[in-house]
Length: 74
Image (tube, rainbow, N blue to C red):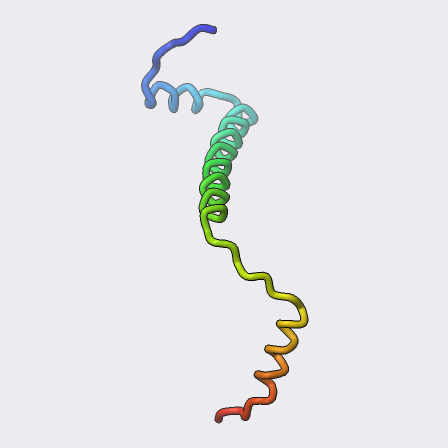
């Protein structure tokens, strides 16, 4: 593998010289990298949260019934 150091501006100029389909591929690759990074951060955040107490459908229905039995406030 050959490594050639280039500046960001040189990279941008090179991308601008690509055909539209190739520019689209570069754009898609950048979006995928960004999405993967966002997804990884989201997953990390979700896994660091404490577990949520399990709530069953029966629990939800009991809560709905209790709220419906309360007098309505005007």
